Amino acid sequence: MESETKRAWSGLKRLIFLLVLFTLFPPFQAHAQCTGSPQPGASCHGYILSSADISNPTAQCSDMSPKLVELLNCMEGYLPEKAKVISSVSDSQGMDRCIPSEHSRPPCAHVIYSCHYGGRDCIGQSYAVDFKNSECYAEIRQALAYCGGGRIKTYSTHIHVSVGCENGCNCDCGLTKVNPVTPEFNAVAKVGKTATSIEEKNVIVKVGDMVYFDASDSVGVGSFSWDYADGNTATGASPSHSFSSEGTYTVALTFTGNLNLG
Image (spheres, rainbow, N blue to C red):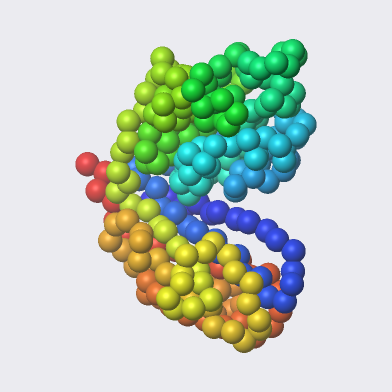
């Protein structure tokens, strides 16, 4: 079994709770070359937009189509940290300068009608990303399969992942198709301020307020243990806890079970 940590950081108000999700992966382990810390860059939907490759991270993050954001949100839970580095979403020249229009087309990173610009039929939003670390191909391909599938192509400098063809954008349909695969085992954890609204990854509450957790959407059979990062722990799928002092708490869920690897 393999565990991987999802982390996010934010500034303090009074108490900020940040959920850490330990995911057990089926049936492969992260390759040795896909371990280690990611490169520096701006944060976008749980990923790093590499500062060495992207000069306009805010614009490129906002260029993502809803379908691409949905894919990346799902894949994040299956990827080691080193794999979560993106070298291109759309273009540092700007989306509007790199799609066919009345503007003159400057030197752009991708070809006309690339899925990075929405293909021929979804122009103006990106349906593709380039993952910077090509040594993480196996992990990225497996995560893509667990999250509904799509298209993939590996290069010496990056791994191109696209859902443009699957969403009718008329781009990348000739690339390698990755079919959906149902995960055998996966931890899914949420947090909320009330017992009936547990849908978040992080919440802000007052000191002493009850915080509610839920892991009942996890896939597979196993046991749950929680570490609240304040000296307290809990077990079970749906515990609750209050924090007695101000701070940022990174809480960990460990989902332990057995995989049948055949």
